[in-house]
Amino acid sequence: MTVQKRCHRPDDRSGTAGRVEEAFRNCKERDESALIVYLTGGFPSFETSLSYILACSEGGADVIEIGVPFSDPMADGAVIQKASDEALRAGVTPKRVLELTARVREKCDVPIVLMGYYNPIFRMGEEEFVRQAKEAGADGLIVADLPMEESLTLEMLCMNEGIHLIQLIAPTTSEDRMMHIAGRSSGYLYLVSRLGTTGAKGELSENLPTLIERAKEAAGDLPLAVGFGISTKEHVEEITAMGADGVIVGSAILSRMIDGVKPHEIRDFVKELKSGSRKK
Image 1: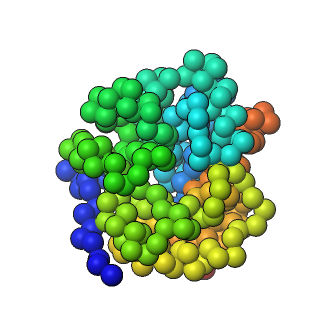
Image 2: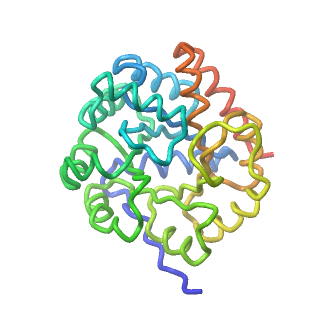
């Protein structure tokens, strides 16, 4: 097996992407995993979306992924599909998500990663999207449907702007390909915990410990964050105990928002999730 040279770009020269590294470093020093939360940008409305994101930061989220609503979110389950659909119907566009990011950045220093699909980036233009993301205060991008082989131009643009391009691996990814993808990922490596789409599940995959072990081997010193199907404090505890450096929760938060839960209740839920991140 050929081990790829890991170039965990960008470095700290921009002064912005360093927020992600600092978050993981602080968690490591506290003997915790990082809690990463996902919220759909502009859901349930532009203004309330800002309140929910700030509530997550107050609750102890170490990194916040802001979803860019897209009409065909093929990696997402019913909850995120619904949130994206309602945001789009309310007029949320990629530019509005960038405005939201800038509003968040004015209020707090939490690392922000924009997560979505390639089409909106293609329509705006890769260079323009990355430039505006940087100006808004984003620290990274996740593009769920952009294969590593097609991401080189975007990767270089992100590197030049000092923004992370975070790559994903899945249970079906071979060990050799994990190595390649980890070598091209920056900020953290996103491990999809199971086959299928996003969405809260009652039980974690029984194969997850082995999968995390394989992914950690591939990631080397790059933090490994696990997402998809994680919904409780107990899940966070279990995945932290398996050795993950970060745990990502999205649908469990959005489903509460769909049910009308208020921002302060989301803050309390995030606080509960974060309490499961301490290593034992």
